[in-house]
Amino acid sequence: MKQRDEHAKKYEAEGVFDDNYGLETRLFDALSMTMRHRYLYVCNMRTNMSRWSKSIVQDYLPGEYMFDAGNIWLQCIHPDDRQAYLDDIGNVFNGKSLYHDLEYRAKDANGNYVRCTCNGYRLKGVGEEPDLFVGTIQNHGVIENIDPVTSLYNVYEFLNQVKRVHRQHVPVDILVLGISGFHLINDTYGYTNGNKLLLNLAQQLQNLATDDIMLFRLNGMKLAFMLPCSSRSAVRELYETALYIVKNELSLEGEPIRLYIAASAVHYEGTDEDGSTLLSELDYLIEMSKREKNGELIYVDEHHEDSPRHRLDVLGAVKRSILNNCEGFYLVYQPQVDFLGRVIGAEALLRWRSITHGVVPPNEFIPWLENDISFYDLGLWILRQALYDGLGLLKNNPVFTISVNISYRQLERESFLEDVLDILAETGFPAENLVLEFTEHCRTLEPNRLQYIVNFFNDHKIRIAADDFGTGYSALMLLRSIHFDTIKIDQNFIRGMLSRNADKVIVNTIIDCAHKLDTKVCVEGVENEDLMHITRGYEAEYYQGYLIAKPLELAALKAFVEGKEMAGE
Ligand code: C2E
Ligand code: MG
Ligand code: MG
Image (cartoon, rainbow, N blue to C red; front, side):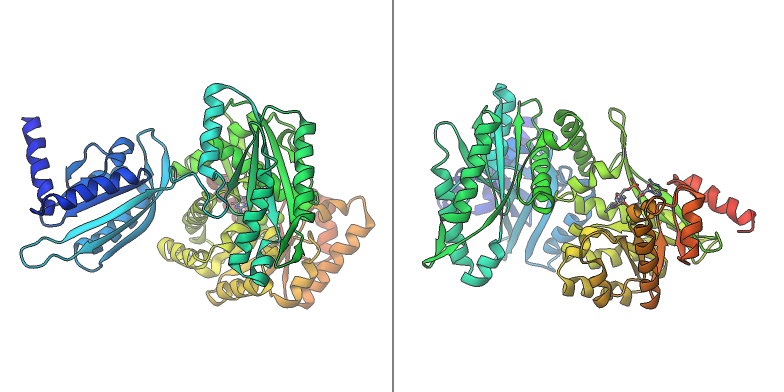
């Protein structure tokens, strides 16, 4: 019976193309055979029968011919992305739109979520002909493995190789080079010339990739060598040679060009197959090499006290949690009090916990995660969660503020501004009770852009605090052009006041300066009475620290606030 049904379905679906000597069917076959990494579909909108290329059946779906495939496919889509998918596809089916164009996460046959881009188009039928809905789904986990600009293997092949090392247990050394200075080249010589230069660099580096050494172009301006298990001195030698090339051997239109590199490396034993976690760690170290080490090569295990294996285990698990609806993440809240000791708000601080790894503090994963694409989703989750939690606190205290930390990568994304407004609307949390704390790195954004963002939020009644104020060279310069509602002085200065007079002078001066610019000051890291006493002498507006309370889970925060209210503070 089942077989007969299948047969009937197949027959009906083949009718998708009417009688045209099977030309379209053969075309469909040919296209789907040549597009291993892009899945093709055609749906007869009248009968809701559709045909799918064989490769999607291997990776996801139960059959090549399906009735109501939209709903079958829906089950593969990440629950958080389903509504967006239903809305977009709904518009095509109800005639409001001709196009379907959406990116979402979908779970493959191995149970892993991968990012897919789905593009579809409604072909209008004439007379009796049905409308067809035709399109492709691109699975970014498995797209082609060659970079078109340099012709080097790309990041997908790199990840394949990591898997191979894992399977075969043959250790390798990986050297990643982050090239900077390219935006200047593109601005000065144009994009096409920029690509030529990159190609030239890739060719010169490829000459170093003799024997079993492989060279890859990873995302952005990053290149990676994978060497069969080598000594550290051999890896360093390779790095030195690459450094020489980027400094001395490149030219454009007859002019010598000098680029800069930062580098990271790992000796990889193949113990873990999660290549993308390994990559995020290498990316993170590149950023650190750039910012703190003048481009020097940093080896994964030189940087951390924990074994690299343990660390990568934790980071991989943290990242998988994000894809899994942010399971394992939760927020704690540290109260903030005013000059008179009244609780005026709380800062939301992220935590992550798992059965195997226990509670992991944010400093151990946020700087690393910031480089990962999944961080954006986590950031929105944090904001949404903090605002829902905050609603309960506003009932008794309508001026209570919730402060949420925001990092550089979130501000970089164009959509962030609207996303914040959407979450305010969704939660019903009043904008005037929200403070966004821009962490130190945010202030490296282009000043005009930063100013625009601050103005945008202020216009919507959202206040901005500058976190970790005083770190970085340009802190004071920023006050000239941007008006923050509050600055939070970096805790190192606060703690330093107990032993160094200079720190007292600096803190006093920063507070004075802020007040003259009509900016409030929050003192963080108030650990004891001495620090409280000193900073109260400088008349800072707000105080936060272990002396007042450690970060508390929501219920404990509520009890803390109520306790203070009962005590009449
Ligand atoms: P931050 O925003 O400057 O947060 C203050 C940090 O100081 C918190 O550490 C807090 O627990 C700690 N702290 C507060 N009072 C005291 C004190 O009296 N003494 C000492 N020694 N420490 C104190 P935590 O929770 O480990 O967070 C560290 C950093 O991680 C934060 O620094 C922030 O930059 C980042 N972070 C935390 N949660 C988030 C988040 O949701 N999003 C983003 N983007 N970053 C976050
Ligand atoms: Mg903060
Ligand atoms: Mg801070």
